[in-house]
Image (cartoon, rainbow, N blue to C red; front, side):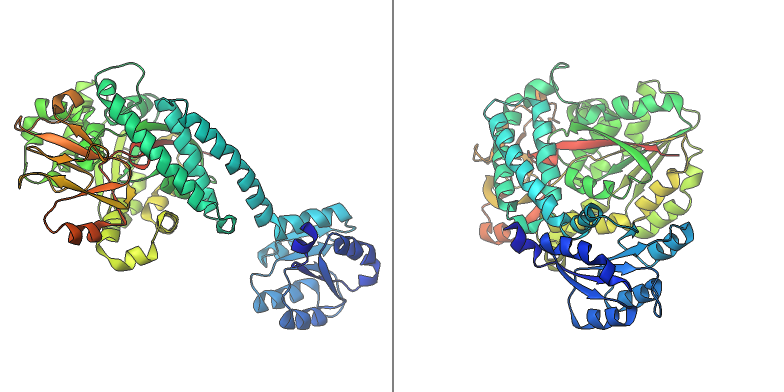
Length: 525
């Protein structure tokens, strides 16, 4: 079977002393590779024009058309064709010239068979070898996760389960040929079912206890941000609205060359929606405490749920004052809502390092989530989680946010913390919700007089104060969707069921919405 697989790999070896390489060529053929030969650059170019090779070994010193000249012509014909330069010359300038022409590797003569085989496996077979390893590892992790689910995992175990699932999901994006994605998605669905049951059972105890519980949204500033103020010139806290762990892993790939990266995890408060989770982060309070201690801010524009995030800077100022945090100067709070403003911040980010504390909220991913629900073209571009990750990666690579981080990487005395207020989940199952006309319109959670939904699909909260949720007028209860369900009122049920099916939403109980990364970046300078 291995022999048949390798026969699809065709190699061209170009060398003016090709007869002296017969033993190496025979070795590669014995390993299953199909090797063609050329003893000059002109013949090599003609062969490449008329054949589909997977790899070229190119001698650097040949009479007539030399190796580098031949390399240029080969890359003009087939830019993606891997070329390995083989040379007696070890000078640095030659290597720089060859690498500049995008060689895939180089070997110093005389080459030995093991060197050849290693290069061939690295270039031609790495995808298959990585896929084989991923398959083996995933089978082990699948069995391990299944065992964990039967052993009543605690909140720390759920973090471990989610991190493993997400890391495997991201890695599988590069190995669609394995056919394991649906198996993974089925297991993730099973995990979300059990996780929802676990949260429903334990959430009330968590928010009313200080022991054996996850770190929650209202503890982020005090646990991860404020301690860094003591020994740094400037601290930057970037909060990316609605960012899932898998999206962060896509961004992280671009940052390894600039930073040492460490991660921790916390749980978002319920509902996993911006008015609750993000206000809790900046105020350092549970939502019910916000309503109690700052009614003038909480009750402003009470008919508009989204407007409750207009006062984050005020809440942060009050938290700094309440915790007696000593700043060298006033903190800076910035909310980025559009690309023009973001580029402006990127251009002057160096001046922000004069501030002891900088808090920057970036709304792009949340905007992308909502836009996908509203515009068919975005759903076409990002039809599933894998494509959604790819879209996130493309945005980040070209974003002003990445530009800001690259500039801050040159400031070793600056500390950077990155996190999010909640994630999102791809909603595939609608469920009827009942309530009066005053009930809130949110798809993953609702509050109002007598709002109801099937208990198997939603967590029902009839005493909000016991869950540290706002009591509002004292006559409301909450329903919070589990797993990948979304709420639809009976009026025009089928219309809205279809409208919101296969959209990313937040506010409910799922691993993607609740288990969130907290990242610390340390400059490599």
